[in-house]
Length: 233
Image (cartoon, rainbow, N blue to C red; front, side, top):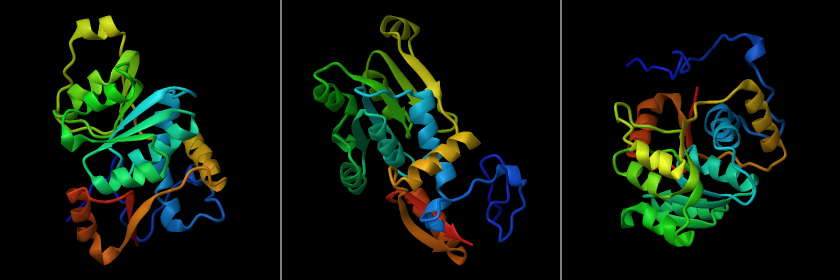
Protein backbone atom coordinates (compact mmCIF):
# COMPACT_ATOMS: atom_id res chain seq x y z
CA UNK A 1 0.00 0.00 0.00
CA UNK A 2 1.44 3.37 -1.00
CA UNK A 3 1.47 5.96 1.79
CA UNK A 4 1.35 9.66 1.01
CA UNK A 5 3.44 12.22 2.83
CA UNK A 6 2.17 15.50 4.22
CA UNK A 7 3.82 17.60 1.52
CA UNK A 8 6.28 15.13 -0.05
CA UNK A 9 6.13 11.35 -0.48
CA UNK A 10 8.95 8.99 0.46
CA UNK A 11 9.53 9.25 4.21
CA UNK A 12 9.07 5.51 4.79
CA UNK A 13 12.33 4.56 3.09
CA UNK A 14 15.63 3.15 4.31
CA UNK A 15 17.52 6.00 2.66
CA UNK A 16 16.43 9.56 1.94
CA UNK A 17 18.34 12.24 0.07
CA UNK A 18 17.92 15.87 1.10
CA UNK A 19 19.98 19.07 0.74
CA UNK A 20 22.39 19.55 3.64
CA UNK A 21 20.98 23.04 4.25
CA UNK A 22 17.78 21.40 5.50
CA UNK A 23 19.53 19.58 8.36
CA UNK A 24 19.66 20.51 12.03
CA UNK A 25 22.03 18.89 14.51
CA UNK A 26 20.31 16.69 17.07
CA UNK A 27 21.20 17.52 20.71
CA UNK A 28 23.77 15.02 21.99
CA UNK A 29 21.70 13.53 24.82
CA UNK A 30 18.44 13.15 22.84
CA UNK A 31 17.76 9.55 21.66
CA UNK A 32 16.93 9.21 17.97
CA UNK A 33 13.41 7.93 18.66
CA UNK A 34 12.74 11.25 20.47
CA UNK A 35 14.68 13.34 17.99
CA UNK A 36 12.62 12.15 15.02
CA UNK A 37 9.41 13.75 16.38
CA UNK A 38 10.98 17.17 17.03
CA UNK A 39 10.29 18.59 13.57
CA UNK A 40 6.67 17.49 13.69
CA UNK A 41 4.91 17.27 17.04
CA UNK A 42 7.29 19.45 19.04
CA UNK A 43 8.33 22.24 16.68
CA UNK A 44 4.78 22.44 15.27
CA UNK A 45 3.60 23.14 18.82
CA UNK A 46 6.33 25.74 19.26
CA UNK A 47 5.19 27.56 16.12
CA UNK A 48 1.52 27.41 17.13
CA UNK A 49 2.05 28.61 20.69
CA UNK A 50 4.71 31.28 20.20
CA UNK A 51 4.09 32.61 16.69
CA UNK A 52 0.42 32.12 15.88
CA UNK A 53 -1.27 32.11 19.28
CA UNK A 54 1.39 34.49 20.68
CA UNK A 55 0.89 33.14 24.20
CA UNK A 56 2.16 35.50 26.90
CA UNK A 57 2.79 35.17 30.65
CA UNK A 58 -0.41 35.36 32.68
CA UNK A 59 -2.71 34.37 29.82
CA UNK A 60 -5.17 31.48 29.95
CA UNK A 61 -5.01 28.76 27.29
CA UNK A 62 -7.36 25.86 26.52
CA UNK A 63 -5.98 22.93 24.53
CA UNK A 64 -8.64 20.97 22.66
CA UNK A 65 -7.07 17.53 22.30
CA UNK A 66 -3.88 16.53 24.10
CA UNK A 67 -2.57 13.86 21.78
CA UNK A 68 0.81 13.71 20.06
CA UNK A 69 0.93 17.44 19.28
CA UNK A 70 -1.26 18.77 22.09
CA UNK A 71 0.92 17.30 24.86
CA UNK A 72 3.89 19.24 23.51
CA UNK A 73 1.82 22.40 23.09
CA UNK A 74 0.92 22.02 26.76
CA UNK A 75 4.58 22.11 27.69
CA UNK A 76 5.20 25.07 25.37
CA UNK A 77 2.27 27.04 26.79
CA UNK A 78 3.42 26.38 30.35
CA UNK A 79 6.93 27.47 29.39
CA UNK A 80 5.44 30.68 27.97
CA UNK A 81 3.90 31.40 31.37
CA UNK A 82 0.26 30.54 30.64
CA UNK A 83 -2.39 28.94 32.86
CA UNK A 84 -3.42 25.87 30.87
CA UNK A 85 -6.60 23.80 30.62
CA UNK A 86 -6.23 20.41 28.90
CA UNK A 87 -9.37 19.03 27.21
CA UNK A 88 -9.74 15.50 25.85
CA UNK A 89 -11.98 12.43 25.80
CA UNK A 90 -9.16 10.05 26.80
CA UNK A 91 -8.66 9.66 30.56
CA UNK A 92 -5.05 8.44 30.24
CA UNK A 93 -4.14 11.48 28.13
CA UNK A 94 -5.69 13.81 30.67
CA UNK A 95 -3.73 12.15 33.47
CA UNK A 96 -0.51 12.53 31.48
CA UNK A 97 -1.37 16.16 30.74
CA UNK A 98 -1.76 16.77 34.46
CA UNK A 99 1.63 15.15 35.08
CA UNK A 100 3.17 17.46 32.46
CA UNK A 101 1.83 20.56 34.21
CA UNK A 102 -1.75 21.20 33.12
CA UNK A 103 -3.39 23.50 35.67
CA UNK A 104 -6.82 21.96 35.02
CA UNK A 105 -8.21 19.09 32.98
CA UNK A 106 -11.64 18.70 31.36
CA UNK A 107 -13.15 15.40 30.21
CA UNK A 108 -15.12 16.35 27.09
CA UNK A 109 -17.19 13.18 27.40
CA UNK A 110 -19.09 14.87 30.24
CA UNK A 111 -20.75 17.38 27.90
CA UNK A 112 -19.93 20.62 26.04
CA UNK A 113 -16.50 21.53 27.39
CA UNK A 114 -17.00 25.29 27.26
CA UNK A 115 -19.21 25.01 30.33
CA UNK A 116 -16.29 23.63 32.35
CA UNK A 117 -13.90 26.20 30.84
CA UNK A 118 -16.26 29.01 31.83
CA UNK A 119 -16.54 27.66 35.34
CA UNK A 120 -12.76 27.37 35.69
CA UNK A 121 -12.29 30.98 34.52
CA UNK A 122 -15.13 32.50 36.55
CA UNK A 123 -17.21 32.82 33.35
CA UNK A 124 -14.57 34.99 31.69
CA UNK A 125 -13.28 32.49 29.13
CA UNK A 126 -9.71 31.97 27.97
CA UNK A 127 -7.35 34.18 25.99
CA UNK A 128 -6.44 31.39 23.57
CA UNK A 129 -8.03 28.16 22.38
CA UNK A 130 -5.63 25.87 20.52
CA UNK A 131 -7.60 23.31 18.52
CA UNK A 132 -5.80 20.05 17.81
CA UNK A 133 -9.17 18.44 17.13
CA UNK A 134 -11.69 20.32 14.98
CA UNK A 135 -15.03 18.68 14.31
CA UNK A 136 -18.73 19.49 14.53
CA UNK A 137 -18.70 18.65 18.23
CA UNK A 138 -15.68 20.72 19.26
CA UNK A 139 -16.20 23.86 17.16
CA UNK A 140 -19.16 25.36 19.09
CA UNK A 141 -17.47 24.88 22.46
CA UNK A 142 -14.18 26.25 21.11
CA UNK A 143 -15.88 29.54 20.23
CA UNK A 144 -17.78 29.71 23.50
CA UNK A 145 -14.63 29.10 25.52
CA UNK A 146 -13.06 32.35 24.29
CA UNK A 147 -13.07 35.60 26.21
CA UNK A 148 -13.55 38.93 24.48
CA UNK A 149 -10.70 39.58 22.00
CA UNK A 150 -9.68 35.93 22.36
CA UNK A 151 -7.79 33.98 19.73
CA UNK A 152 -8.81 30.60 18.25
CA UNK A 153 -5.92 28.81 16.54
CA UNK A 154 -6.49 25.65 14.51
CA UNK A 155 -3.61 23.18 14.32
CA UNK A 156 -5.65 20.03 13.66
CA UNK A 157 -8.65 19.81 11.37
CA UNK A 158 -11.21 17.52 9.79
CA UNK A 159 -11.02 17.62 5.96
CA UNK A 160 -14.15 18.94 4.26
CA UNK A 161 -15.58 20.29 7.52
CA UNK A 162 -16.83 23.85 6.86
CA UNK A 163 -15.94 26.56 9.34
CA UNK A 164 -19.18 28.06 10.60
CA UNK A 165 -19.03 31.43 12.33
CA UNK A 166 -21.53 34.28 12.65
CA UNK A 167 -19.90 37.56 11.55
CA UNK A 168 -21.78 39.57 14.19
CA UNK A 169 -20.32 37.28 16.89
CA UNK A 170 -16.82 37.85 15.56
CA UNK A 171 -17.33 41.60 15.49
CA UNK A 172 -19.06 41.84 18.85
CA UNK A 173 -16.43 39.74 20.61
CA UNK A 174 -13.45 40.84 18.50
CA UNK A 175 -12.36 37.23 18.14
CA UNK A 176 -9.44 36.19 15.94
CA UNK A 177 -9.49 32.88 14.05
CA UNK A 178 -6.14 31.63 12.77
CA UNK A 179 -4.55 28.54 11.30
CA UNK A 180 -1.12 27.17 12.21
CA UNK A 181 0.88 24.85 9.95
CA UNK A 182 4.22 23.17 10.64
CA UNK A 183 7.29 25.32 11.45
CA UNK A 184 10.36 26.96 10.01
CA UNK A 185 13.93 25.67 10.21
CA UNK A 186 14.76 28.46 12.67
CA UNK A 187 11.85 27.38 14.87
CA UNK A 188 13.03 23.77 14.68
CA UNK A 189 16.48 24.85 15.85
CA UNK A 190 14.94 26.87 18.70
CA UNK A 191 12.86 23.82 19.63
CA UNK A 192 15.96 21.64 19.66
CA UNK A 193 17.63 24.14 21.97
CA UNK A 194 14.72 23.87 24.42
CA UNK A 195 14.93 20.07 24.30
CA UNK A 196 18.71 20.21 24.75
CA UNK A 197 18.16 22.34 27.86
CA UNK A 198 15.61 19.74 29.07
CA UNK A 199 12.92 22.40 29.25
CA UNK A 200 10.69 20.42 26.86
CA UNK A 201 10.24 16.66 27.00
CA UNK A 202 9.52 14.82 23.71
CA UNK A 203 6.77 12.26 24.40
CA UNK A 204 7.04 8.94 22.53
CA UNK A 205 4.48 6.26 23.30
CA UNK A 206 5.63 3.30 21.18
CA UNK A 207 8.35 2.45 18.68
CA UNK A 208 7.17 0.08 15.93
CA UNK A 209 9.55 -1.94 13.74
CA UNK A 210 9.07 -1.30 10.03
CA UNK A 211 7.48 -4.73 9.55
CA UNK A 212 4.61 -3.59 11.81
CA UNK A 213 3.82 -0.41 9.88
CA UNK A 214 0.17 -1.43 9.45
CA UNK A 215 -0.15 -1.96 13.21
CA UNK A 216 1.28 1.52 13.71
CA UNK A 217 -1.39 3.01 11.44
CA UNK A 218 -4.14 1.04 13.13
CA UNK A 219 -3.02 2.35 16.53
CA UNK A 220 -3.10 5.85 15.07
CA UNK A 221 -6.61 5.33 13.71
CA UNK A 222 -7.83 4.12 17.09
CA UNK A 223 -6.54 7.32 18.70
CA UNK A 224 -5.28 5.75 21.90
CA UNK A 225 -1.61 6.76 21.81
CA UNK A 226 -0.07 8.82 24.57
CA UNK A 227 2.25 11.09 22.63
CA UNK A 228 3.75 10.19 19.26
CA UNK A 229 4.35 6.73 17.82
CA UNK A 230 7.62 6.14 15.97
CA UNK A 231 8.42 3.81 13.07
CA UNK A 232 11.95 2.34 13.19
CA UNK A 233 13.36 1.81 9.71
